[in-house]
Amino acid sequence: MTGATAIERDGYGTPQRWVDRTGGPTLDELHASRWHHRAACRDWPAYLWTDDYTHAQTSPAIPICEECPVRGACLASALVYGDEYGIYGGTTASERARLTRRLRHGETLGAVLAAVLGSPERASSRADRGAA
Image: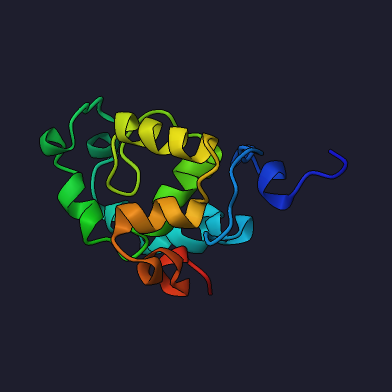
């Protein structure tokens, strides 16, 4: 795998090359080992995040995500790696599809995260991004 990043080599996936990650976390910061251990979902059953919820109001996971200290990293990871199913960062697949369209139209990852999370500071804070 010449030229592959550590993230690509360990099976985490391939980042969407068209995502402008300006203002968002680096690929290293998005690596699951940087933030999964602090995720609010770690002690809950996985099915809460994998069931096919089409509306945020119907998912029992959303309130847990809203209080999660790594919500930004989770959402950024889902957007950068193109996760199409499940709940990530407090968003459903259909909500992320809309966010992905914004990214495809040239909006930066940092701007999209700030819009969802409520402030540029929260979207780009090192603690939220999972930096050590």
